[in-house]
Image (cartoon, rainbow, N blue to C red):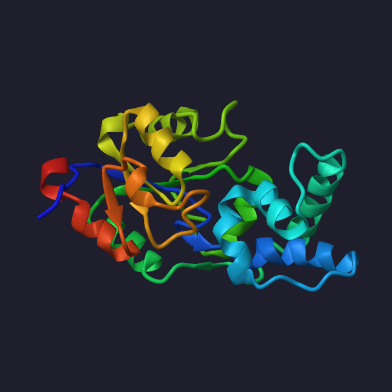
Length: 225
C-alpha cells in the first residue's frame, strides 16, 4: 500500500481538477477566432492549456503572448467573452461528486483554491452545484496567486486548520509548488489538464491520483481523528 495521509480536510484546484471548464474557456477564444474569420479549434486541442486561463487560451487560440502589444486588449476581450458564457458546458469530472459526498460522510472538510478570480469563480462554482463549498479561495482573494502559498494558507485559516492537517489536490505544477511552500501534502490529479509540461512524475508531488475516486484511498481517516 502506498502513502496515506492523516488529514482533516482536502482542498482542490478548480479548473482541470474538480471540473472540466475547458469547453467554456475554449468557446470564448473560438468566438474571438470566428470574429476574425478563423475556424474554431477543437476543444481537445485547447484543453491542455485551460488551466492557464486567458494566457493559455490566447496563446493556443490566437498565437498571442503577454509580449505582444495588443495582448492586454485581447485579454479583456477574452474575459468579456468568457463572462458572457462561463457556465454552459462546464461539468464536474466523473467521480468528483461522489468524492465530495464521501469526504463529507467521513467528517472531513473540503474547499476550493483556484487562480480564477472570484467574479468568474463564484458563478462557475454555483453552476457546478458546489455553492455549499465550506471554503472558496479565488485568485484575487489574497495578494498573491499560486504557486505562492498565500491562497492555501488562507483556506487553512478559514477552516481553522494547520497546513499539515490539509491535503491539496491539483492538476498543474504550480498547485504542487504552492502546497509545498505552504507546508501541505500534495496530490497530482493525473486525470486533469496537467498544465504546461504535463509529466506529473516530475512534479515531486507526495502522491499521484489517476481518478477522483482514488483520492479516497490516500486518506487515513482514523489517523486524522
